[in-house]
Image (cartoon, rainbow, N blue to C red; front, side, top):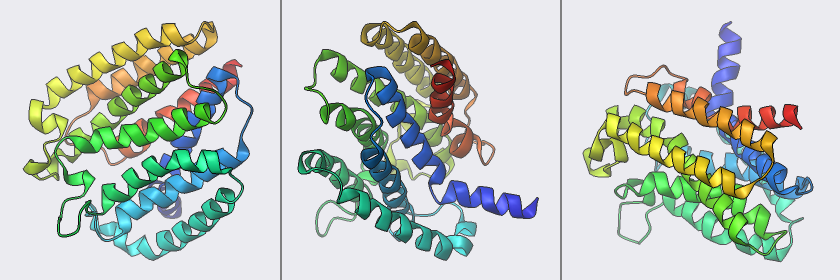
Length: 270
């Protein structure tokens, strides 16, 4: 059991779990728009997610909440390097047009960890309520906008789908902000800090309801709608149960795993 826990913790702390969630959202986008499986793009984003997240978490700028992570930091660094090399390999296979789409989201990720201006100590992660929206913008950009823009001229349905994805990720991130209230400095002004935990949950519930409305505009497919409604109630339940004193894996595994559950659900229903 001890070794299983070590492996599981590595799976979480190395950002493999979050990368699989991003990959799952990519695949869901392909399901919704009948896109052909794009191995190059999907794996580039998968390895890029691990590289980006571990850069943010372990570059020495972002503060660690759990000092026990430092024991395995060397292994995570080696793993991150391998993922970076794989990302670079798939990068060489992408066309220039698609690579250009990644520039704004790559910059957001970089400045999320690194101070925006020389002489300024704050990065995007530490600027007011911006953190949660930067995360949602990057996730929706790389899992919805980019795969769609690389195949289609963006229309109303594609934009609505991307907006829905943005709102979904905002709600997905709220339980993390609720958990982190014990660690976050007051100047961060996260949504739960500003309006309180219960109002943050109500805010998230409203955003989720908006995603349901959008769902009925973007697809006539009853299977996709049914799958989305299951995910809607799942995320709503997890949001309502979120609290500042969560179990270790409540947000980092269970909530982060909801996109994976969604993807598996749609795969079974196809």
